[in-house]
Length: 356
Figure 1 (cartoon, helix red, strand yellow):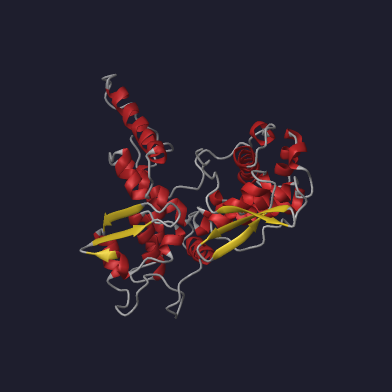
Figure 2 (tube, helix red, strand yellow):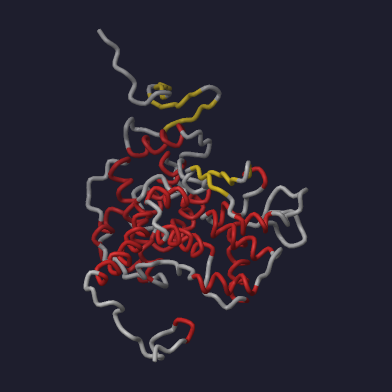
């Protein structure tokens, strides 16, 4: 007779005084798994054990509540595989959900309950994040915990947001910032690093000499683990030349060699933007860099390489926008009417010139 393969490697049965217990063992790591075998509690604890979690598998929440579902998700391999920064963000968002509605049985939640939770948030982006996280939890319950009910978050009304998201810096705003923050200033260095490399805040806070070789800067994006490798343009090279040679990191706190916390770096940079009277952010510079590449005719994969993305989904947004402008120009050129119009002084903003 062929022995049946164990569905859950590392788990073995323990029988004590006629009662069955389950234990997970791998090397020196041992932990009890709650039964019954194959139940939702068993599966959640098994995934946590596989991830090497030694925390107690006894839930602190009532089984079946939203708080309990959140705990199962936080113990799962799906959560463990996220980047550290993403884990921190998700934990904060799920902590809010647990506080607001953790005591309710998640299977009894309806669309109106999801929308009521969304309404507690200020702004459409935050409200939509509630919808997204609730949908993610219901999908997790269906795939990992045997839940067979509906996903009410999927049918909750999505709030309308600015389709362009973060403000993209214009060339005029870039120039105003550089005029305000001159050569050798930290503000100028951070701005040119962000614009020329496409780095996000968490990468800017850790980039240094270890990432530079033969006139290029190479790093692995913290959020996605995608590698990026690009040339150092002259304007950035000039600012990097002024970084003290005995300092590893390019960007450090004032009068210190200590790195910035990610959020602190973003807040510090916003203050520098306010000084220059520009409505900017570090993420907006990342978008500006991608826009520049698209306007110059860069391919989607070239833009994706700058953004350190593993696919061209987001890059396509920039190329499509740039192509629309080029197609409009070529379309009007086919009318064969020369210049479209002679703009009045009030409408022609180019250098304040009049066409009279």
